[in-house]
Each structure stands twice: as C-alpha cells, then as structure tokens.
Length: 584
Ligand code: HEM
Image 1 (cartoon, rainbow, N blue to C red):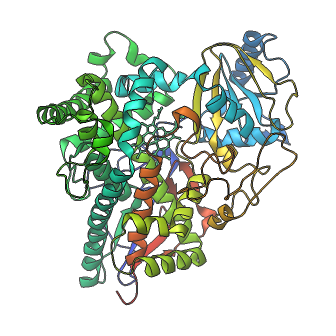
Image 2 (image 1 turned 30 degrees about the horizontal axis):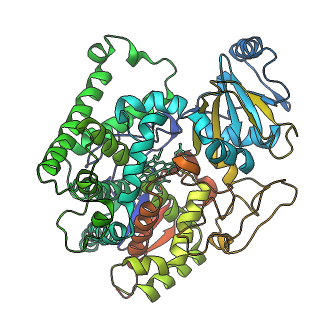
Image 3 (image 1 turned 180 degrees about the horizontal axis):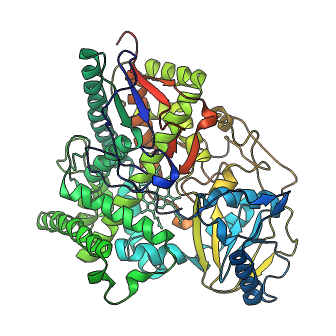
C-alpha cells in the first residue's frame, strides 16, 4: 500500500479536478517499488492480513493444477495431521498459490467449497478457518478465555510489547479494566471536536491543491487518498490518545517516518515464513532489522517523553471524578492523561508505553482504510453519494459536526458500516486454543461439533462472515440500507438473525444486532476498545469530505482489483475524480 500523494505530471485536462489514486501502486508486482512521493514516503501494507495467494491458472481442464511442491506439501500435511482431523473438511492449499491475491480472498472460495468450518493445510502449517456466526460466537465470547492471539501475538509482541492486542490474559485483564473507562461519553464528545479540526486540515489541504489547478489549467494532481486518510487518522490518534500533534497532514517528521517504518516491518514479519529476526545477531546484521530497531527507538523515546511529562503533572482522581471533568475546558483531554491520573493505577512506564503504541497502531491504519473504501464505494454508486450529501447538507450545512450531529448522521454511519462489511480491517481474527475444546459444527457441519486440541491455530474469517450468502442478501453489493431491515435464515440453527431492533441507539449494527454475523470490531471480551471512537471519527471525516467535494467515477469498476486492505488500483492506477461541489 502506498503512502503517497501528489504525483504531479498531468494527463487530465479537466477543470478543477483531482484524480484520486487509491493505491499509488500500478500493479501488484511492483507494490514495493519506489514511486515519487512527497510526504513520509514509506510504503506499508496491512500487517493483519498479509499472506498472499494467487489465482494464476490454478485449473487445467477444470482440474486443479499442482506442482511438485504442492504435492510434497500435501503429503506432509496428511502425514502430520494423521487421524486428528476427524470429520472436519480439509482444504489443501497449493503452496504454489502463496503469492498473488490476498489470502482472505482464497479463504472465501474454500468456504463456499468446503463449508463454514474447515481446516486449511499448507505443508507443516495448518489453520482452522471459521466462517460461521455460531462458531465465531463460541470462540470470541462464550469460551473466549480458552484462546489467545497465537501467531498474531508472536508477530506484534516485539512492537506492542504487552499492549492489549498481543497481551496474554493475565496482563490483559487489569489493563483492559483500566483502559475501557477512558473511552467515556464526555471524552468521546470532546474528541468529536478534534476529529472536526483535523478533518478540516485535510479538507483545506485538498482545497489548496484544487486552487493550484485552477490557476494553471494544464496542471493536474493525483492524490493517494489512503495516504491522506492515513495522515488524518495519525494526527487524530496522536492528539486524542496522547495529546501529541504529529501534524502529518501538513508536514513530515522523523517520528512519522518511524511510525510507518514500524508498520511496514510488522507487515513484513506477518508474511515472512522464517522468523529470521529472532536469530541472535539479526538485529545488528540485517539492515532492515537495524532500521526497525532505530524506528522503534524514535517512537519509544517520543512516547517516553510524553509519559514522563504526563506523570510529572499527575492529578490523581477516582474514575467517576475523571469522567466528570469538563472536557470542553481541560487543556489535555487525552487518554494518556486519564490513565496517568487514575487513582490506584500506578502503572509502570513500560506498560503505559505498550498501551499507547498499541492504540497508535490499532487505531490508525484501520480508520484510514475504512474511509478509503467508503469513498471508493461512493464513487461507484452516485445515487448513494447524492443521498449521503443530502444528509450532510441537511444536518450540517456548512458547520463542523458535533457529538449530537454524529448521532443524526445515520446514513453516513451506515456507509461506514457497509464499507467495513465489504472490506473489514482486519479481515481475519486470529486465535490459538490454550486448551482442548469442542467447537460447534456450524452451518451444514458435523452435528456433534469438532474437537480441537490445545495449540490449534484458528482464523475467524470476518471477510467470509460479512460476505456469506447464507447470512446476507446480495452479499457483494454496496447497500448501506441493508442494515435497516431484519434478516433471518431459519436453516442456520442457533443464529438469531440480524435485527436492527435488538440494540436500539447503537451507533452501528454491532455483533449483538447481527448475532455475530457482522464483526468489524470483533466481539466478546477482546472486542475493539476504540469502536465508538473509530466510528465517530470516520463519520466526521467522511461527512466533512462530502460537505465540500463531489466524487466522479473515472474508470469502470470492473477494472478495479483488490490488492490488499484498502489498496485498490485500476489498470492505469487511476479511477475517480474529486471536484469541489457546485455553489460552494
Ligand atoms: C475502523 C477502525 C477500527 C477497526 C476496524 C478496529 C478493529 C478491531 C478489531 C477487529 C479488534 C479485535 C481484534 C481481535 O479480536 O483479535 C480490535 C481490537 C482493538 N482495537 Fe480496534 N479497530 C479500529 C479502531 C481502533 C481505535 C481508534 C483504537 C484506539 C484508539 C483501537 C484499539 C484497539 C485495541 C486496544 C484493541 C485490543 C482490544 C483487546 O484485546 O482488549 N481500535 N480492533
């Protein structure tokens, strides 16, 4: 995924328009090649889901084509799994497929072929793939403490330490208890103002670019929209979580570069099969590992400074008093302030730093991706765009959104939800069984369920759940209105169906409303702590963009391919124009 922006030279002569490039990546194979860019130009991709497979000519005369490597891999799988697989369907992945399209797309094909619980075997590696709401509910909520983050924790621990996402259960419990109250209503209300101020910076930047094309009609600018949203989300997370202004919408800095460098490395590690960075001297001998440790040091130093300053000005209070502060007046309303001031929470600096680092990473790319996908879908659906703009005009006019406005911007929130349904970030939730368990069989699965052993690695495919033909009508269609009507499937035993009436007043169609068919923020005790925050932030960002700009499809949607996460490109890398709305 590109972190890019204005690739200046012009091809488009249309008046006062930009071409939005949602990738900056002309094709898959050169995703890591340098394209000239101006801001913190570090290429990065989603670290959660980066395992790639390709579709390239897997079939020959309708039969699966396997290479020698595939056969060897499958032999190894059968040999190693022995009789333990029982009645569970097995999808034998072709190792030769490990490059190309994202893994979660292949997992979908195998879901349709093998059912909602199957075992994916790649040579000595095997994963259980779950695409069923009842089984997901069992793992995430009903028996949640029988699982930890497994592979994901291995990858993220060097970066996030014992932060909430990779944390083992003993570390996680007290930290979760301390952090959740920090996202209280008064905090969120104050943060809506920050979302508005930061989004305004992005809008002004786009307007300034537009002006340059007005003066010189031959001039054309390309914008990598995901990079813009990424800068916006980084600025927001910095200010809201630790009262630090990265200012990344308008400038670059060593800290910003280090953040992207770290994300890039996390992604690299999630796709590299041999954990060479664990070798004793790798840290000093391998240049990219040296750079990674330098980047980590830059961020850690920055966070340590912020923690030291916050602790030096500590004003201890109990939770109720902290939540009762007048957040519209306090100088520092950040989550760090809350965590430091919390009575009885004498948390050590290292743990605080891990918590902040986790939120910095967890709450940044995810938001940028959903905003990018939302704009991408709106450009392809002009009728929905008009509907969204009408809502924005009615509720906001030319004002910035308030907390109350966000509640009223129902259609914008549904657009965000629908973008998260079609393109969930992350598309897979990863778990490892801490003890033996028996999973429900799932739709069309074994009635007696499936016994799994300790150490079993599991992918809960959020992508499959969100696009399951058994759970949704027209699952691949962009239809924000779907969330307003109930949906049931009596064939799925134990699934309560989707009902918007189940949790009235919720900001988005959560896992209760959907009974675990819609899990953009996960579910159960390890559900995202920032779900409300993220939803409000995305709503404000999208509403303020639509307040000022129109989007126009430039290329046919058929030519758009998914590379990963929010990285999209057309054949020529360009697909949509943005222009200032008439009459503004
Ligand atoms: C659109 C934006 C976001 C999406 C789609 C998202 C998604 C998720 C998901 C799916 C999980 C559960 C992971 C699992 O069960 O393995 C999660 C966990 C988490 N998220 Fe988010 N997130 C977003 C924004 C944020 C923000 C803004 C923050 C913080 C300010 C945040 C902080 C966290 C933390 C700390 C966890 C770990 C919770 C725990 O294990 O107790 N996220 N997120």
